[in-house]
Length: 161
Image (cartoon, rainbow, N blue to C red):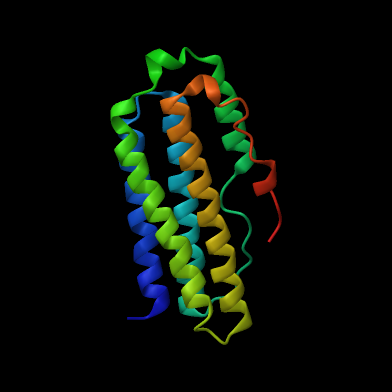
């Protein structure tokens, strides 16, 4: 199977997962973060579609870390115990596992390509998926022990590719 066709399906599955998790989220803040991640997966899908079709395009960071930082800040102002649902942690762990597998897929396929632009897209996507994994881990930590998540900011993730 073509790398890009497989990767496009993987991104579509990621979008579906995040939209499903967002529907189940008991916190508006978590719901908004998951929706932001779903939207990032749509951008990833579009990068890959353009790449597969040979269409020239400009790509940028799909995951808006500033927006996610703001959402976490807003969540910290909410009554955490009333809004966070620990029963969903297994779902978030599954999302974390999928993000880690996606990152590894892009890193593995990077080595198989010769085209520098294609390689740069896969490198970019691997970094984006790493961001998603870190965000999901913060959500898990936030749900389990909200008082211990002092700083849910991700300044180290805000970088240009």
